[in-house]
Image (cartoon, rainbow, N blue to C red; front, side):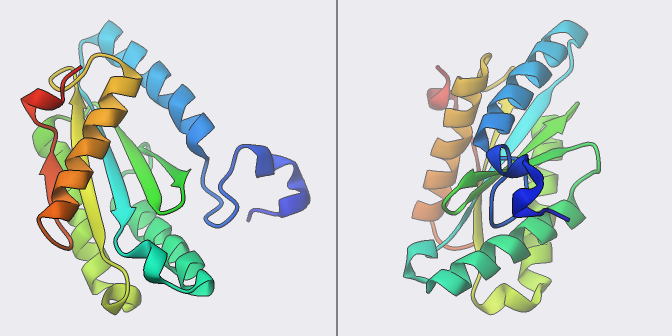
Length: 168
């Protein structure tokens, strides 16, 4: 269990206890280097809690905690989940193609719709894959973020895949 006085607060999200965006950046860069060396795919899913700013602060915290639990219970133990701040969580999926990432994102979406907080919390997701959507960590993250923004523009609880035009 995360304790604020444990010294881990510098690398973890204070609400979810998950690794933060700094850890995500390092992990993503290293995992892309490994994927490049082993010639295996890698995918990321960028999740955003919808209408987050309209929630009261205590509901925001509950939404992030419950969403992080849903994601953790829906993806593989070997996948890396990080809190990127505000209303965003991201997952790095090792050795996972675009189809596998879409399947994982849909599994999270369905689990979230079955969760007790389903009436309040919905998620949009953007999927981006190495090497098909980007070759570098920052570009891959931007492609997933752009895909998530497109998902939000099309309605609640949607998943979108990075488009070819999202490539850097």
